[in-house]
Image 1 (spheres, rainbow, N blue to C red):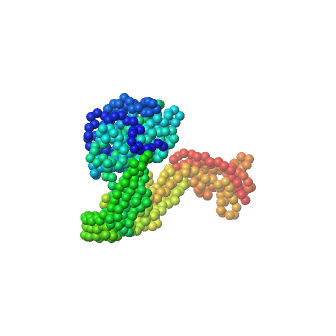
Image 2: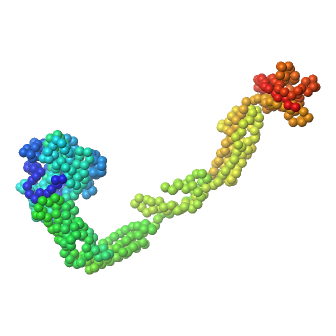
Image 3: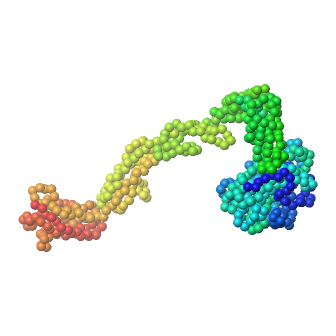
Length: 580
């Protein structure tokens, strides 16, 4: 990587200042926090390679095609990089400038402004993220995209150590990462010490450019601010161990403290009047002349702080080593090794937690939901509910689940015309009301049993409501109705044993009568005949005899006709095995 600050001269070769810029003190909008380019001068043009150096040509005032653009935090991250998030705005601000073309190249874009250096504004701190498109094979290093910053006086003379320049060079730049053909650097903070220029108005120029050849882009996000070049004490008083933390300005490459520490922050035992020195080296400084030093002497500090705080019951408020938990007014004096006296006056209000007592009566199988808690069993529950910006509330819930279990007749199959008794009962719980229903109507109320004669398949429902009215249960009985028929046995035994001694037809009430019953022997000879007999009556059956004489055991055949209640006639036939 070729990232460097130069002590003098201009490597970024940006154009002369635009006419009419004037001596405007744009301190308040260096970071574009007004959301505009107020106080800034914008320009653009084309880049060419002349004598192996970039030449900024065809300068035009203003901007086109969003080559200078104010961006805000709400716009999120740069869309080109997905390896990591590059916010369009740094964490230090709400707005930033995007400068440069995001596609193609062959152009330069510049923004410049002036600002006044005062005793409290001596440190120019800037933040940037830069994306440069690489073409390793076709471009020489001077042709490649880049980004630069330069500070000059109003006469155009560059101040010592007052510029920064980065340009692709073929190898991955130090501190940069690569995604595809883009080399990028996420938000970085750098700074320039300007104490030697107090009272002067200076000018900063920020330039982004693409390549001079095939049109590869280069652009950056940028903002800045003026701070004081100083060492700061992180807290007014030392910590409980008597140590203070000193902070050097952010945005430099190296820090060398007088006690040997090389960190930006120094933790040291606090001694009144003890001097500290830090020598600071800017990023990639080419000359020790760019180094500068800052000094700090530990002072005695006094402070009086009035605090008015509100906390919630169960929380606490801590000042130093003291913890406060109750409403009241308190004074805490903090003394640290004759370095600091801090008086803190605390007006503390402890808010009680809102408490809600509720009772839930539900039916078992249901649930009670209180915010994120789902309750399915009886009991007493204490639930803490968080409220944004307010104290939590407490819900004391007494939850009771009532039990109710019922049972109805199991599923049945019957022959059409046969009656069936349906029985419903309450197994667990105290019932209040009961009834039987079909799919279309209520069959009985305040009942447990009912006798029905279904003529087609259907479901019946036994419904019970508990005495409290909280629970309602329904159990289903499915009745399958089979067609009307007469059943004839395939064998019978005609002997002294009266069991199964005659052959006859069994049927339900849907059968009006047996019109005829004829029995044939194996040679087709009729051996028995009867007609117009009752169904399911063995007195009218065949006893295995012909003309009073017992026939031999063996296989016989029957043919029967039956008349149903609806007048229709059904015929039945089959084998009979006569046993002896």
